[in-house]
Length: 298
Length: 277
Image (cartoon, rainbow over all chains, first blue to last red; front, side, top):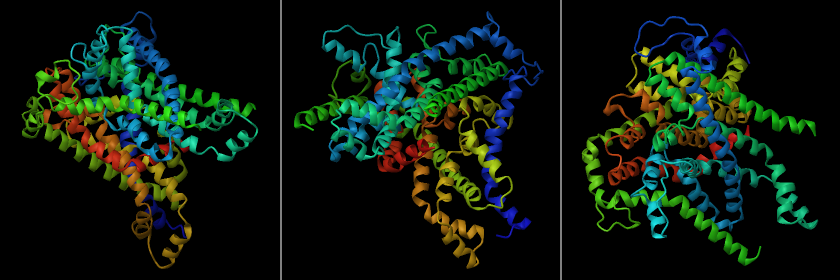
C-alpha cells in the first residue's frame, strides 16, 4: 500500500474524533485530577494556591479529619467487599449451574428472569427496595407479621443494614456473573465429561476436576469485576441507608463525594479519589498475578 | 438424570425466579394503588381499588409536582444521542486502528485506549465535574452526553470485529477504485450491523441507567434525567408516597426493560465478549 503523507493524513482523520473525545474526557481529567489534588481547591473560590503533597499527607496523618474520613470509609468499603464478593461469585456460579441443569426448553426463560434486575438503574433498584424494606409498610415485614415474627429494622439497625445492602446487591447484579458463568460452562468440551463418566466419576468429582479448572480464567474475571464493582459501591448505601445507622455504612465513595460537594474541599477529595483509584488498580493487578502466577508455577 | 431430581431442580428454579421477580411485580402492583393503600402494610398483590391516578398525574406533570415526562425525554435523548456518537466515532477509530496500517502512532493509541479500560471511574469523576464547571457546561445536555464518548469499550469491541473481517473484500473494493471512506461506509459498516446493535444496546442502557454523574452534573429540575430525578425524589419530601414513587419507577423502567428483553441476545453477547480478553 502506498504511504504518502496524504494517505497517512486521511487514515488519521478516521481516528481523530474519538481520540479528541478520549483526550478531553479521559486523559485531561486524569491529569487535571492530579493537579487539583496538589492545590487548595475550594469549590466556589477562584484562588487555588499550590499546596504540594499536603492533602495526601493530611490523609495519612492519624488524628486529622481527612484521615478519619478516608480510613473509616475505606474500612466500611472493605467490609462490604469481603461480605459481598464471595457471595457474588458463589451464588452466581450456583445459579449458572442450576440454569444449565434445567431442561433445554426452559433455560432461556429462567435465565431472563434472573438477569432482569440487572437491566434496572441503580436509583430505581434502590427505591423499590426502600419500599420493600420499609419497617412499617414494607412487604418483607408484612410477610413476617403474617408469620407472627416481629418487624425487622432492615435499614436502620445492624446487622440488618448489612444484610439488606448485600441482598439488594445480589438481587441487582448477580445476573451479570451468572451470564458469564453460563457462557464459560458451555465452553467446557462435552467429551471431558463423557470420558470422566466412563471412568465412573460422580457429579462432585466431575465438578471439582473438570468444571472448576476449565472455568478458572473466567472465575478470575468475575472476581476482579466483582471486587471493583463492590469497591465502587455508592448507590445502595447512599439511597437505602444514607450511611446509617450512624456512620456504619458510610462507604468511601460517599465520603469522597460529600467531602467535595458538601464541604466543598475538592482538592483534598481529589487526593482521596486518586488513592482510592490506586487501591482498586492494585487489587486487580494482585488478583490477576495471583491466579496467573500459580498457573506458571505448575 | 432421574425424573425426581429434574422435578426438584425445576421447583428450585421457580422459587428462585419468584424471589427475583417479586420486587418488580410489587413495584407494578403498588403503582396501581392510592397512597393510603400503598402504606397500609398489606400483602395484596392485586390492589383492592386499582387506580391509574398515579400514571395520569405523571402524564400531566402533576405527579409530586415534577416534570417526569421531561425527565424521561431527557434520558431518552441523552441515551440516543450518546449512543449514536459512540457508534460513529468508535467505529471510525476502530476501522483506522484495525485496517489502516499507515496511521501514525497506531500502536501507541491502541495501547492507551485499552489501558484506559482499567481506569476506575472515581479517578476521573471529580476532575470531570470541575472541567465542565470551568467550561460553564454544568446543567447542559453537553455535560450529560460528552463524558460517555471517551469510553474505550466500543472501540475495543469493534476493533476485534474489524481485525477478523476478511481482507480480500476490502482489497477488491480498493482495486475497483474505492477510497477509505467508501470502504468504511459501503463495506465495513453494512457488515457490522449485528455487532453495532450489540454495542448500541449496551451503550444505551449504560447511559440511560447511570445516575451518579447526572445527579451531580445537573442542577435545575428540567435538566434532570429520570434516574437522577428518582434518586432525588426518594430522598425528598415524598419518601413514603410509594404509590406515586412506584408509578415513576415503572415509567422509568419500561424503556430499558423493553430494550433489554428484545435485545437480550445481543446484550449477553456484549457481556461475554468483554470477558473473553
